[in-house]
Length: 189
Length: 230
Image (cartoon, rainbow over all chains, first blue to last red; front, side, top):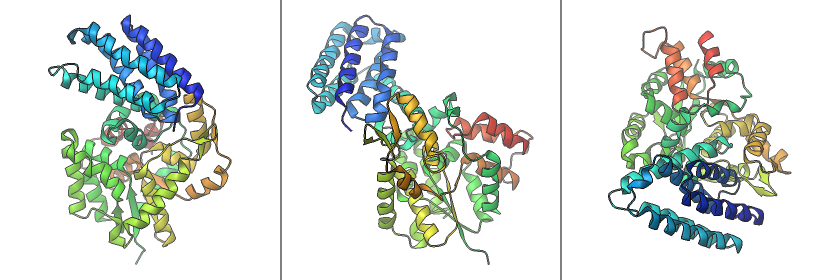
């Protein structure tokens, strides 16, 4: 589903703040901005916003752990990412969803192709960021299979991560455990 | 002779059992079960065909493959239910489910193929008068059937968007009535009561239940506490 006009404005604002936080190396703000995109990722499920959520979270992790220092000529890299984010903002302002998605993918590819030596490491950070975002999306009520599909993951990856999170207690079961056990026992009798 | 029963597996419990080394329980349970354990093509894709190509999950997928080879798990064709019949019903249910909740008149996609294929197979079996239950850990699908209002509230609260059940949902939700679900923890409990766990320790049940929780089954701590007392 395409973003509404209102959501395009919000997404553009998030990217503007991302450019600033990236320049200031503010991991906390980046993490918060990534979480903000999750709400619309769940509702609209457009690939631009999903890519944005994963990318911003990955950048927050690289800065938080000071791993960005491993990236040769970080300043040049930061400018390149920001230039794609600026193009994505322009596309959002023109309601051009295809261009928005394209520029977000380019920004992600910039990160992935940072250096041959760092490629496996960056891929792992991106994978973990995707799993983290998946858990947030699942928390919003989207099924784990649907969530896995949205983020290009498998249910195996998501299952392991979900099990380690305490958030699953939020929804109330309609059937009591006693009733479900009685159902299971009578079925297997 | 009692009529054959069918237990339909969604991907979640199979992944959970494979990761926890509990797949032997399905072999054991099948020995005394009057019926079949079935999986759809869509569930096979999630549990075997796709993960077998990923090094990290290859072994887990091969364990599930072994259950298909030994016919502990079978495909619906073993009951003369065609793939095309399941696919058509899956598409219909998925389309309905993904339009039940709306944001500004547009449907929110909440479910995908594998879980809907389990419902599709279950409805086909029920129409043929075959008793069946779906083993599913996925809470979204269970809530769609058992408590759609809760699903609506959760999504609206979490997304902070005006999400509501669609105007058509009253009729659409009827398609999701009459499904019965159990989860990984209930299967573990039944296996434990039948003496199939083969772990001789007073903490065997609780340890097994914790294991299912830590591999993604949506069972709460309170439910585990209640199970330990039963």
